[in-house]
Image 1: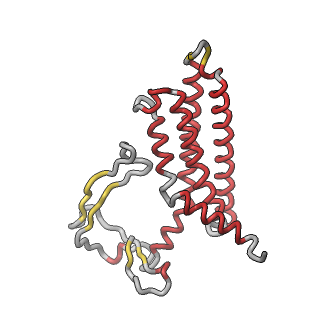
Image 2 (image 1 turned 30 degrees about the vertical axis):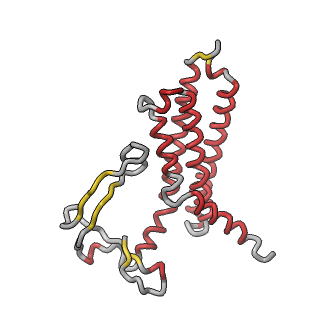
Image 3 (image 1 turned 180 degrees about the vertical axis):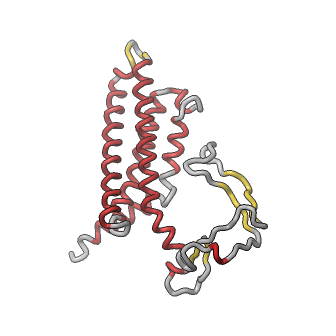
Length: 222
């Protein structure tokens, strides 16, 4: 994606998307990008250098000046997809937390019987179900009124679900002790993925600002 018409008075029509063949002269894949030491998280990414690369004009997607339109069109469904994956990840983290604490003993009783564990397992279930229902509602709104009208709900899940997954993964790590931060369990990977998605497709702060502005807009006549 790049600017093809920087002087266009409509700033949303200044960009275009074009497919560039990987074997085109001048395309160099510099390195895969590690995130928290992991590769391919949450989506495979790399640093790529383009030096005097040429591609046929027929490779432009949809047409010149429609790059922003394409980007915006995929953001809503993409965010739903991210949140669905995070909910599944949180479910697996909670399952591991339960199985682990049911089989480990500390201070004379199973860790699952400790008050702090009971509280965290209960809160994790509450947070997961809240996120699941909010995501389902956002998806329903997208299907019935479209991405633009549902932008508030989409922004809300983008803030709520990664934060939920971060918290549940963190509790699961704590329940596993030192093993939780090792690669022997997938919990460190889960935490890294959830933390990364608080930035991917826009940081929390941007989405919170959008949500707040929509809320203030409901009282604009005051």
